[in-house]
Amino acid sequence: MDETTLTKTLPRAGPTEECYRLIYRSHSLIPTDGSDGGADGLAAILRKARSKNAALGVTGALMLYDDWFAQVLEGPRDVVEALFGTIRADPRHESVRLDLAEAVPRRLFEKWAMAIVAEHHQPDLPMVATTGGLAQCAPWKVTLEQEAVLTRLRDLTRGYGRGS
Image 1 (cartoon, one colour):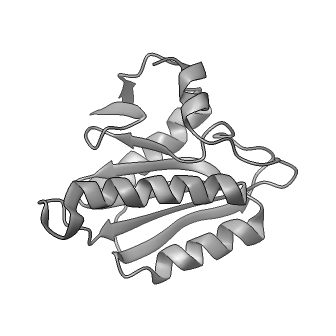
Image 2: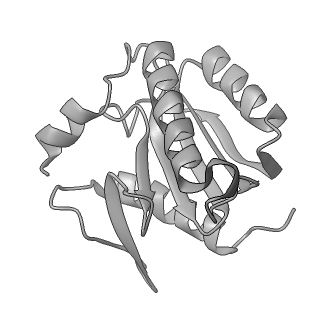
């Protein structure tokens, strides 16, 4: 899969006139052992979230590791903050912690309604953790700015800075 395929596969996000970036991490309570929907339930949730993000004009990436999520959301401030409020109230998450929320000059993930970044779970961007950051397994280019944010997400899911 190349970058063109990725952007066609992911629903396109809306306009970029206002840009606000929010990063959070949470502990997932979605069982991954096959009970209560398990991995299939997670896949359905991710499909629905991706579609909703595209409709709202929200872009970003979701890092999955074990039962931890870290996500970057980009879009209009009021929309991103409302979406984060919904996520924070969702009973399928616990230990939700805001890591960053700020106005930024532009989106870093403008082509991705929600790219799934993981070592498992059929990701859009398969990544392998390394000591110095992330080593791409995907055949398309990730910019240095994107890699910096993805490394931050990786650190949040691995426990670096996970203090509640």
